[in-house]
Image (cartoon, rainbow, N blue to C red; front, side):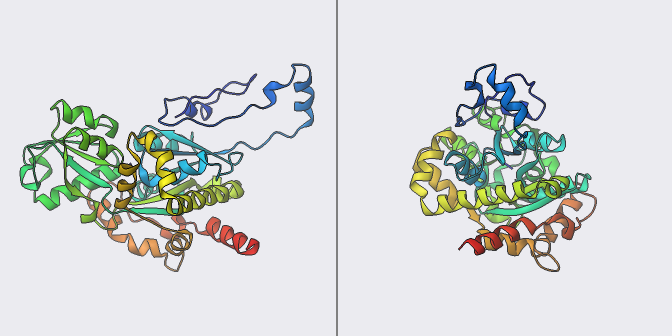
Length: 355
């Protein structure tokens, strides 16, 4: 669940996928000059002689600390930018829209969102398991709502995503309330601070780093993902045909995630110093937000994607049943089809050969 400005190359129109790079971003991209430095007479000759390079695989993600190792990989050059372009979007809702519309080749999303995409017929593939939320997804409330007993009759702001609906379902179950006992306001998470500050809502289903912004205006946590273990798992998705046709780029994406995660774990202070300003947090606040996540290393991720039946499928069948009960999906997925361990297997084999 839980944009950068850019233009098409000279002489080319920016297509729909290139337009993804135009929204305002919370971080700056690093770029360098290229063939645009060549004289007008020389450039066409060179262009005629050179093969057209393959377009980079476009990965979309929203502001969520669980995805930030990918941002770190981009900023520190740990990901092959010729193979993968990391694009920051405003919300998971926007990421889902772009993935559905084929403006993205890959996306960082939650497993429940992957199940919904599969149920809708989009045929995604999970190529890496990134993390599990253990407190980083959190329900924040104004000071007058001190606990779950104070929820009845309140207005709850929640993003209209599968994970937002799931968090709200678990919240109401914990409070022993029915949906009719609260007023639900479907709005993107980036607007929650303004809603609670202005009194238009009293409760928000949020996540880090946005939850820290709610703390800054006096809101307090009343429920979090520690009370719903295994429900919120972050994954890397690609379209099935992308996995088949662009296997090397998908492998480069998985490798970039691994390098970014290793840097976060081995150099937490330096990583926080780089990433915290983009999340409007101090480095200390940023590091604190990571305490609500359990990251999976390469071997753990591969183990979850593997097995007969697939380990993640067995562990997440309860989640699938819950989504069916909520009417969000019609049936449990074909886990053998959805979970794709091949890129991670090839990467680990290549790393072993190079050791």
